[in-house]
Image (cartoon, rainbow, N blue to C red):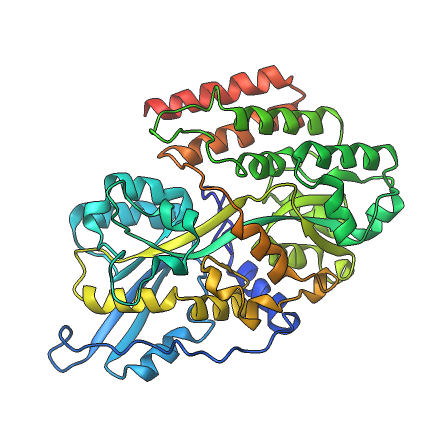
Length: 448
């Protein structure tokens, strides 16, 4: 899991979150292991220590699940001359500045480097020359990846510097017991129909809930998560396709902000800040009835809600497909073992391996070829009323638009949610005052 607030999708706040995701899915995915016809690629012996031995280093932030799913061991067994060493920095906000420093120096780099989705645009636009082009590498097939995921790591002239690992397709997680008490349906198919195709219908359900809310509960946890989900369901948000900053006039930002403000002023939210202690306690206390939840959040909810929440939570389709989070792996050109690193990167991100990571780690695959494998296709989550999460998130993933990501995407998002929205939710400022504060923060960030 990624749980640093300085990343567009949390990864690495605590190892406990990742371990929880493993525990959450290890038993309850209820899926058999597929017969893997895509065995580890055989490595060559042209580079290494002169004795045919090669040590490949993989630099990551947080838990990517490769080691936990046994993939390194599997690859090493098929390639006895290869040893894999993982270099892990827990938080992306510490990892990424180091990556940029090493790229500038041309030294200190791992053979394979992970890249968070919030940073991929900057790497593609400013650092592409320092990475190997993986688009034509042996074992790499564009058709193995979602079109929008492939596009995020590709330059305008067709060079692909990163292969997609996981993604964060969106759903709505909800408390069936609280929905029932408020007079809303509880069956996940019926719940999904309430707001299908329109985020404003989600708030219509929120109004019904608020009118009949069980004492001490709200419909939503936070307007920030709602804003994130809505704005992520568009193809343009803070930048247009030419790279121009458009957040002030963006229709998707306006829609997301207006609906977030409607939820706030309509007293539909618990006014919590995402990933704060009070937010965590809100899960345990049953303080809110629903929230937009990307696939990786299910393990987080289980950890924070605990045993008392088992069977009370369920998962329904979101109003519109959206993505929140994900990563890539790339091969720096300054590496000593580029040829073998490319082979390993291609193998780790192939559909069969992504399915294995999902079964162990709950990281949803970016390779649609994995969606028909039993680890994904048959996946159900026991904690969430045996919700068919493989099917729910795969359906969402296939329809996610290719969102334009700019170099200051994360700063703009943080200003809107952590400054603008929080001022309205927690400080009683008006929506106009909140937006003005966010705009000032963003303009300062863009000037840097």
